[in-house]
Length: 124
Image (cartoon, rainbow, N blue to C red; front, top):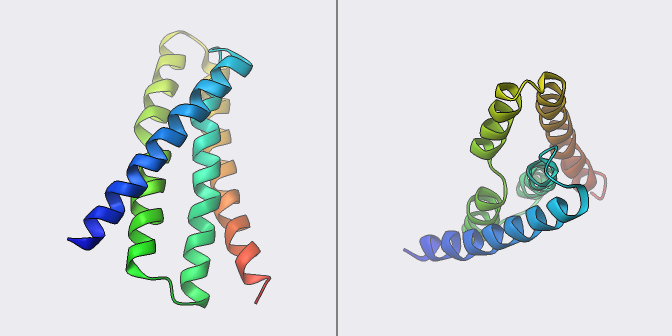
């Protein structure tokens, strides 16, 4: 039961953070490309890599894993929004934007997981 509360707390923080970042990116860049989703996925990937690496080199409590790994990052990042936005780009004929959305999300997010891990591992 204790971990459920940590997941709920992390989820509420992640959801609000995602909402605020999405609004910020929409105001900054407009709606022609889903920069908000890209940003939260990149940030979330970096944090996931960091949390994973910390768990490999030290004790990370189950509560912290539930709070950050499941709750915060689960609410912050979203594959369903990425998928929907990509499909909308395809349906509107914006194939090049759809391609870049897919490529950027995959490449940047995988790189950010790696970067997060390396940040932790290099400090050992």
